[in-house]
Length: 100
View 1 (cartoon, rainbow, N blue to C red):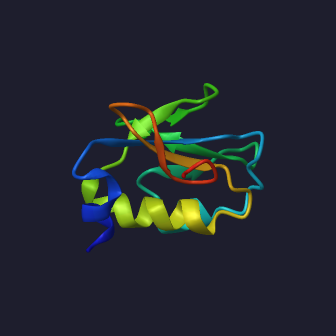
View 2: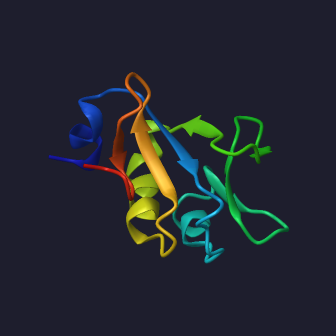
View 3: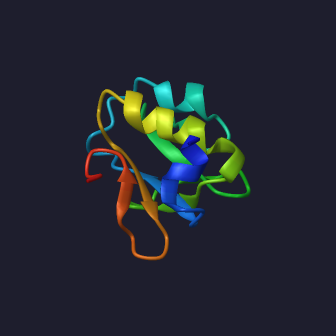
């Protein structure tokens, strides 16, 4: 079973970063530069559809299916354990520090 298949049974996912826990290592931006970027403050943020960094606390963006494996790898490898991937439908975290 691929990561895409196991993720949420095909359900839409979104990702957000807890900047209070971000260590600024940039691993997420290396794995998925289309989704994550480091800002001038040294912290990682998710990027909106227009490439703008979303800096509001808890701001989330949809996880594009072709990038799901990269986003999941980012969450798994993040030393700050600050990347959260959850189902849009019920907001249950499926990858990240609060995943069951």
